[in-house]
Image 1: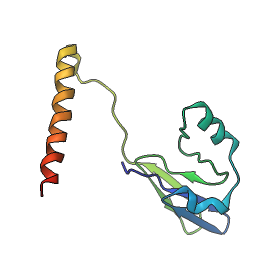
Image 2: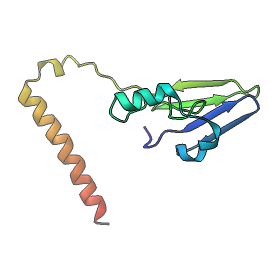
Image 3: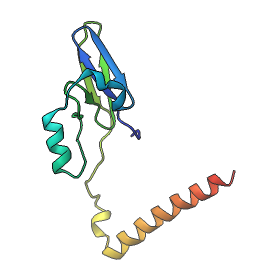
Length: 117
């Protein structure tokens, strides 16, 4: 679930990658599809697009395998499950509020205790 995406460019005889887009600026021009997304969706360019033509980013929770012949295969190893369990379907609005607040405060408390050390 990393914080930053992996940016890459798979060219016929080379493969370039970096943790930030500025490292790959020399590889491409502005991608009009990405520019449209950026201007239309409040500064978001969804994976696999980047602002540079020919430079892509791996989607979250995805890894890439590169075979000796240069073929790239992406595999998603985790997806967020939005389905509601049978037990959760019985929850009231107040139950959900309590669960969210408990989750939030327990994480904040853990971080607060962690920073003391």
